[in-house]
Image (cartoon, rainbow, N blue to C red; front, side):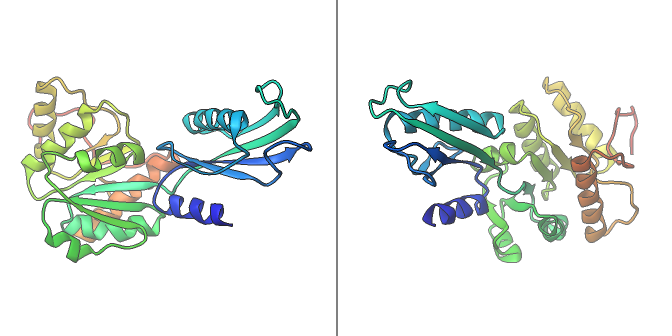
Length: 267
């Protein structure tokens, strides 16, 4: 039962994992039916499937399952694995993905309005801001983490952002937005969704700055952010962003506000 508790805790923390289970085992094999082992995306191990060469093979296979994110059924003759005890073992390797994560850069009015909406959709939300008071304003919870740091160096949250694949930029300064978007695009890692607040003029200026530095603007950048639902309050904008995210996840079309091609004189 302890291995189930460990697995549940890892998933709640947003960590993907592979569960290896001994489904069948002939007499004399070190791994008994029901033995379980967990491998995390960071390579951490919990539990066992019997040790020795069997476990090494199981770990190698689990790493492949983690990379491919596809379950696997594995039948092994332990003599072929170099184990004198012999016998046959059948393993199941199951990839379990933690709930989707979403990183919000900026805990201002829109960030605070968007956070609970995303949580109601099942996202684990991380809010990154450079103002310590934001932590008290938002508070942390089971699906929420607040990180205070420097917008010019988002390394403390960059790996999480890349892994989660969903993020939104709405800081309290145009230069901060630029710093963050530049850092994210400079990773050259594809995202599922990257939204940024701003008028067409502001967004057009930022895009020209990035292109001037040789940074390509990808299709997954939605700026100005949101669907064209009307309304300009923080709550209404947050709803339009959440609606846009839903269309992306479900592969549906929507009346996006983002610029396709930047006009010469946008406003």
